[in-house]
Image 1 (tube, helix red, strand yellow):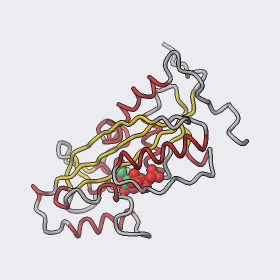
Image 2 (cartoon, protein in one colour):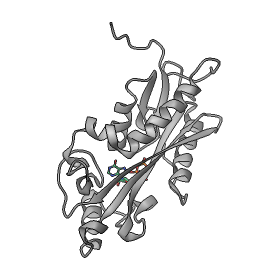
Image 3 (cartoon, helix red, strand yellow):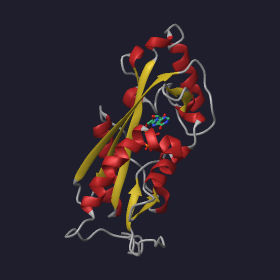
Length: 222
Ligand code: ITT
């Protein structure tokens, strides 16, 4: 059977400044009749500060700000790494762990130092992802996914982003940076949250729901 591209794709702005997240989310949405647009295609637009205390609050803040500012349906992802031996840190502060100016390699080095004395059985951790889908009216729906794993003794692999090189999937014996994006997108916290979010998007775009803009409409103020 011929695989025809949908004729009319509703724009879904992916409200993230993190290119690694955008790549994964866009790949996971490939089979849907939405057109994922990066922020810089609808901007310049600044994401609001992550002032919330939970992934839910921060995902909601980002998605609503972008949906309201652009008039498009928007999807935001707030995610992070919860390490059991650190009482769930860095958690919502994962992107800010190590302070301003720290990069992925600095954050990984700091985490490994903090866990230096922690033996294998206690190196358990999980990635958590909350996805918020916001309508321009400010209405929001949330979805969540969790990926269980453990923190490796040192970084391994070059794929992915963030803490992937030290996040090991026990059943594979590999870190998320040692597997291809397609494999990560079958088991990650983001993939699981997206699976639920796709049901929400399908419902939003289903029969009787009209008024969502596609990218051929004139952008607001343009
Ligand atoms: P946006 O807010 O612009 O989306 P961000 O990177 O600041 O980008 P978060 O505040 O949600 O995003 O922080 C999540 C951090 O958690 C991210 O910067 C990574 O360090 C880490 N993280 C989340 N998902 C990850 C993944 O799949 N692999 C590796 N690290 C991940």
